Picture 1 (cartoon, helix red, strand yellow):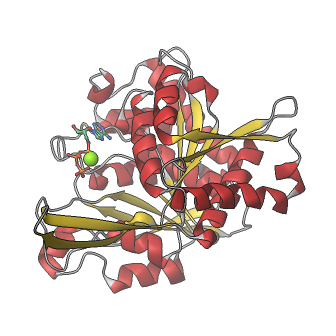
Picture 2 (tube, rainbow, N blue to C red):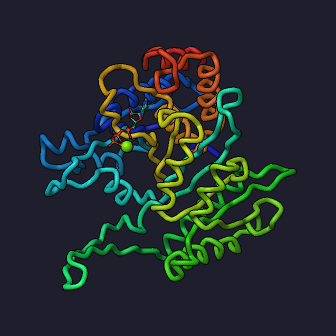
Length: 354
Ligand code: ATP
Ligand code: MG
């Protein structure tokens, strides 16, 4: 079901590095979809490391306000980071996730027939707000050890159930009439019995909230300890469908999964909550190729497609994906995929398909 919007108000936050090249590409693709989606209206917003170096703030209030009040969804490019600790700087993407309650990071990873050696078709659903990312670190000193450092890892019932529900919803949408979807809960509760034990228990507990989730014919629920999950994901990626994990494991797993399908330049994500969704390519600012016109725009274009999917525009999202796949198959590929096409050539080819 779509939102029934007259227009689609998209906040655009290119931020740093290649973010400034890939976001305009995604914009052109949304525009090329024509009447199959509400007419997109783009608001360009500031944020990022470079903005911080000029203004002393990484996420200006106007950006957060505009997203909250004047946008239906958003696209984020990539944010650079200082290599050393800079007083007053903190990542705008982390702040945005908090402000907009984007508690899930959803990353589909799938192979393309005839291009990738192995079949992969999975969705990693990563908890986006807690775990070690609460950044509560302390340091001390003892006679015996010298300097010591500790980090607090927070797992809550609220966030674990919330991400569990999101994972079940996504799994249900992937169930086929003759074949249940599978949902794998990733944890390490053999070692971390309280924290990972709670995560696992909470995800399992929400299953009972919905008949279609608990029915068993639509979703088969399983578990993997995180180390064996990595091993199995490389040995038999085709065994996995929807995977739900606490923040840090989810982060590591999704980069590893991206390695199964070629290039970081292909893998999209969305940061999603119950009321807002923000697309974001998985790659970073790629400083080594920024400004050269050769960055692969597909991760950002797919992120726009995924954003549409989450808003309920399933068919237009599929159109974007189909156009991307046919252009890749035609051989219009950037350097990261072994081709020699420019960013512009790839965008133009996808536009033409649409
Ligand atoms: P950051 O700190 O912002 O993450 P990084 O140096 O880690 O920057 P990434 O953006 O994470 O760089 O990229 C890692 C490598 O993958 C780089 O060599 C980069 O050029 C390449 N890469 C990443 N994204 C793309 C893309 N969209 N197209 C082509 N190459 C890419
Ligand atoms: Mg990086």
